[in-house]
Image 1: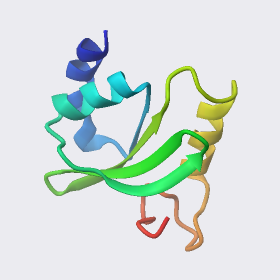
Image 2: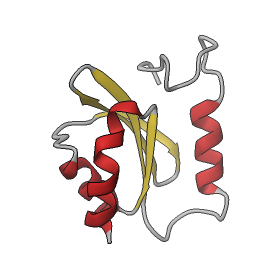
Image 3: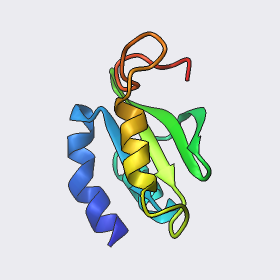
Length: 100
């Protein structure tokens, strides 16, 4: 299932501002399908929820991974809000937040 999802999603990543993946197997499959070999880690948005940045050619985007079966029922919603909330510079994470 993870590999099929990854193959379907990979071509759209050049248009993504952020990708949120639940479960290490799913995240790994997406990164492999897109031929992404390196992530720049920024830290945790919440316990077990990691924010990183990936590069595809000249396009960079956020990658958020959450351990499967971990967190509260609203963890993904909280993560989404954090990605879209203004950062210290007044811009959303997906526009300018390499300092996070």
